[in-house]
Length: 279
Image (cartoon, rainbow, N blue to C red; front, side):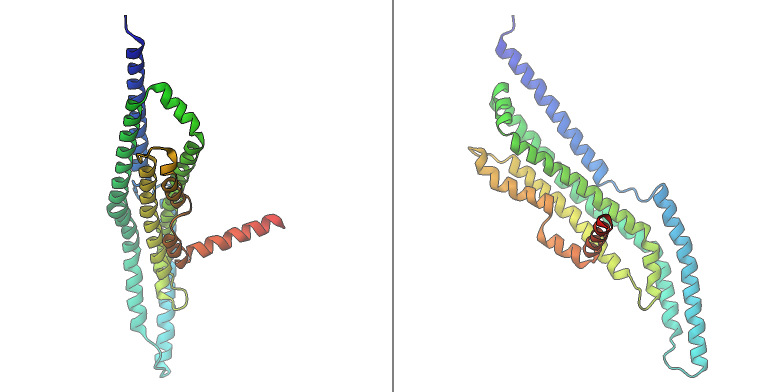
């Protein structure tokens, strides 16, 4: 007849296998959904094609208008007319229509995805090894009693994980909008007062850096969770600090974000919405 100790060991073994499968499933979800950028599809692709169509019409119209105006200015003896400037800018805008979506795809698939998968993979290894060591060192009732006593810490952990996933989805949505609006930004190079290319490049940089730094912050948070200390108070400073990095973001990322103009635009839009709601 099997002893109670053997039954407890079997239950612990099953519980460990279940937790390892759950962690691996969560890691695969993060790697396949957060960093797998397949480009535009569905209505997003339709919107992009629509912007390309109208943008092409707008590009031809603006360039023809500028050329005609400059030809008339040259016939009147004006030295300010520069037809070649308009032609060069038109060729540049046409090239950017192809280059800009390619830049986003290369950035996500060859920079963000490898770095993100590396950080996420390390998170899975740290979490799995820490849980296995904890469950093998203590009996199952001790583990559950310790977990109940640390319920506040685990709630904080779930909040941080929720912020991490939501913020990464938001960053991907921002990059999606950047790709959809890239035709209009590309065409803006032919204008003198409404050139948005610099803002577009800075926005791409800010979102790319945010995704990488956010994933690194989550890895530091995972390392803080799995840190071996005598009591929970020993890991609490690192846990709170790295968790705050995930929730609020490092100050350098905020500086890049606001210097791109996207943060100021988002804040202004939020203030406008609140003002309308209060009226």
